[in-house]
Length: 90
Image: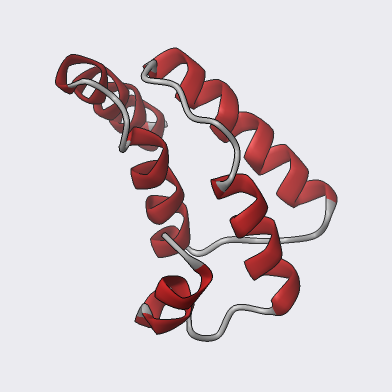
């Protein structure tokens, strides 16, 4: 997704320039097709955001997760969804 697409998406219309830049930098990182790697990237993403005082809404977080899952084969997507469901229950 490009910056223009993000800015036209209602969920991202009110992002601060810092938050938008943070998201765009993250999106430019290479993704893998592994649920395990996705979880590692999500953990790193959360830590970097927290260190910068950036908080994401549930809708923004779902976008990041969807972005990470784009290149996953179906079996890995299912595995990732299962892991995420387990984490949300906690």
